[in-house]
Image (cartoon, rainbow, N blue to C red; front, side, top):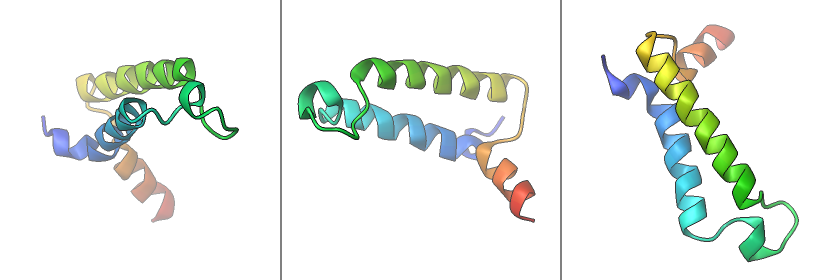
Length: 71
């Protein structure tokens, strides 16, 4: 099993965690266009579960799905 295959999914999760860490969510910024911390948490949970499912069942990565779509 090669985790590099799922690099896009992992990068997305880390990007959202960094946003939370840096306070880039509505409850801190109080500006439209920023998701709430609750939304971030729910989406991160869903993304993590999806990633584990892909790894466990050796499903196509997001990168592979995009390649299939554009080729």
